[in-house]
Image (cartoon, rainbow, N blue to C red; front, side, top):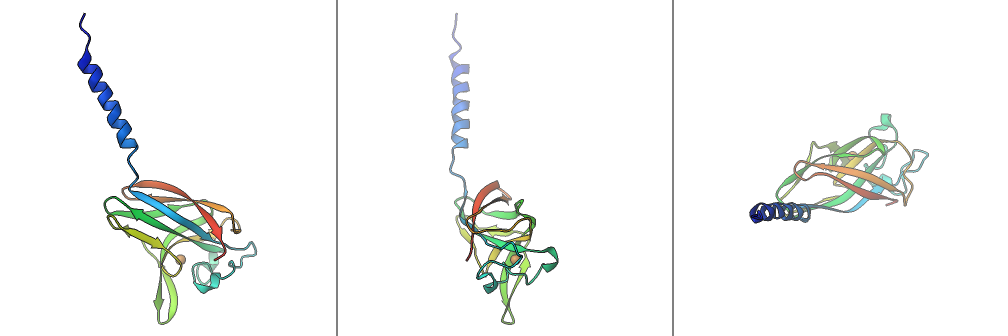
Length: 165
Ligand SMILES: [Cu+2]
């Protein structure tokens, strides 16, 4: 009786390939995620009025707002952050802060470009994740889950710590 070596070998080869592709270092790496603290009385956390993101300077009709910040490192090809999902707020938007006639303003952006091999930092006074209409107060030390949706890398969920800036 002949032993079918070849089919067995190719089968093993396919399994090895599958194992390799699933252990590849992810192209996108998120670090330093944090969310601006907001007290339960609707007042922004200490220091939040320094930039408009945590204050109530817009979207007041929707109640308490906050903002999330993080760094996105990209080891792969160009990608785009399309949106962010979180159950902490009624709506999550990608925003950009800028100076306009000496006043800090912000506007929604439809996506954030993540260049190939580059790094994008979301920080106070720049790009940020706007949390509109918080479902609960954000006490310092608490953790918030954010799911970042990328055009190519797909969904990445990170845990962000609530901080009083
Ligand atoms: Cu904003």
